[in-house]
Image (cartoon, rainbow, N blue to C red; front, side, top):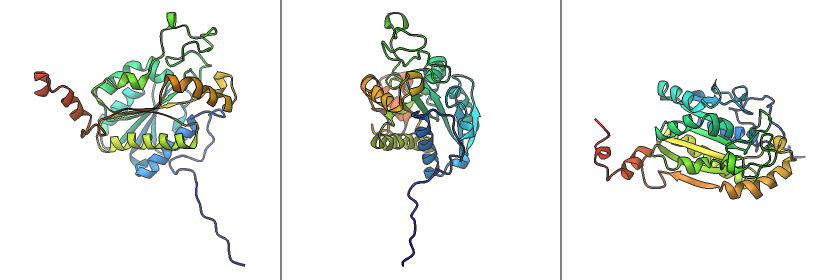
Length: 277
């Protein structure tokens, strides 16, 4: 009888440590963590990569990855990532943040890191709610969405409208790449990995600030099963947060974000001279 052999088709990324995570069943963090680790492995950058953990459900990412990590105060991941990258320009630095961390307490840091064109990569998880702290309304919570702090639904007359992060950042000259993805199906997971890889490759190539937004679920705080939460996300979140590329300066024909910004400012004499003196 011929000897049977096995061919390995799927394994844990080497950058992802063999530990148990704290994520709830149906949470997208586990999937996205794996995609980030796969990209780090494929680019061969584990030894030079520094991650920045947020405050939120992914606060303990530093225990899950084999690369170096720094823990940032709530919302300050872009500022910490900026400091790390400027001091260590040869390192690959990425910030991983949720919607409360990035779009609420960290909005100023997000806006200014993006408009400065910091050479960092940001992975942004948008599940429309504060997860770790118990399900409060987030900047991305949808109109009429019920949360712990909006028990009758988000009232836009008093709480305002949700923040669409990709659309907001797309107006800033320092931004090189923005894409919104999700991870509810194998096809969407493959697209999400492609976007994450591009965001990291942009940093390797010095193209500029890149952010990938992942529209995600929070079954625990939504009070749904994982399956029902995916359906709710498709029916409600994806129409409000459409998937797609919101900025890609390379696809627009520019070498990097700085060249694209110079082209947009071509009619401004002082800007075309390289700035104020």
